Structures are given as structure tokens and as C-alpha cells.
Amino acid sequence: MNRGLRAVNRIVAFVVGLPLVVAGVAAVLWWTGTLSDAWPQTSGALDPRRVQEVVDTGWFGGVATAGGVVLALLALWWLAAHLASPRVGTLRLPGSGADGRLTLDGSALAGHVAEQARRLPGVVGARSVIDREGGRHVLVSTLQVDPEANLPVLSDEVATLVARARDVAELPGMAARTRLAVQRRARGLPRVR
Image 1 (cartoon, one colour):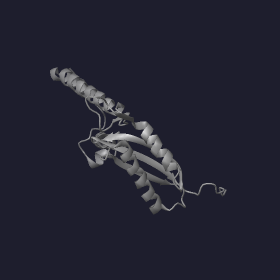
Image 2 (tube, helix red, strand yellow):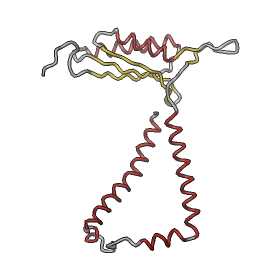
Image 3 (cartoon, helix red, strand yellow):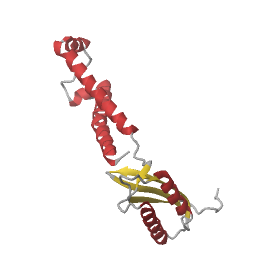
Image 4 (cartoon, one colour):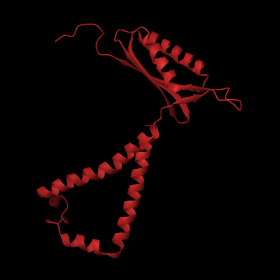
């Protein structure tokens, strides 16, 4: 999921969630009878005849249909946006032209980077993928790191590894995002119970 979609999800969750929380609190206060203390215009009981009057008006059917169509279109857009994967399958390499096309398997490059990262001192696990974010290729890696690892040295070695991946793919504009997840306890040490 890209950053823009995450932002839309947060905004929609807030816009929908806040009125639901307010309505829920108001319903509890109305049920307990304390809402009428703060807001004297509150009726003591619901009048179903008023709802029937609104439903019977001429404009209600058209407004309900239009609202349903808008909600259905928004739901379809939201689902389609979540189905799209940012993963890059193949990378088009420089040198591609009218004579032919040079491509590189993005998952193979990411797998190679993860394999090389596992060989670095202090790294106990690694996984990498190549995503497309904002029109750029991004090498996204997560490295499981031993708590006793020298993080500044490891950071330099990871930067070198990323630079080599850029050179191999001949994609100087490829960005990288690496997360070092330091484990809670050193690997191989007995667990204290």
C-alpha cells in the first residue's frame, strides 16, 4: 500500500469513526437519561411516525439511490486501490531500445540483496523486495540484527550493499529503505525462565 492510500485510509477512518463514536456516546447517554440533562430538547422516546414521514417524501428515493451509487463507487475504488501491489516484477534496464529489451527480474535482485545481507556480521535474517513508490523504484529491506552488532559499521556495509545493487541493475535513481530490527536477546544465548 502506498503512502497516499495510507493517508486516505487514515482520513476516512477519522471522518467515519468520529461521528460513530459521538453517536455511540450520545446513544448511551440518551439510554441512561443523562443526555436530556445536558440537552433539554432531547425527546424521551423515539417516534417511528417521524421516520415514516421522511421515507414517504418524494425526494427520499432519489437521494437514497444517489447516495448508494456514490458509496458503491467509492467502495469499488477503495478495493481496487488495495488490490494493486507496489511490487516490481521486472525492471527495464538501460540499453533497451528498438533492437531489443533488457530486463531484470526484480525479485531475483531483491533476493540476492537479502542473501548478501544475511552474510553481514550481526545480521541473523533478511528479506528484501523492490517496490514502485511515487514513480521510483525502491529497494525495501528488513534486516533482523543481533543486539550485540556494531550498528554504525553494519549501516556502512548495508549502504555499500545497496550501492552495489544500484550498480548491478544500472538504476542510479533507485532509492532504498532499510529497517534494522534489533532482536531482544542475542542469538544462541539460553532463555532465562
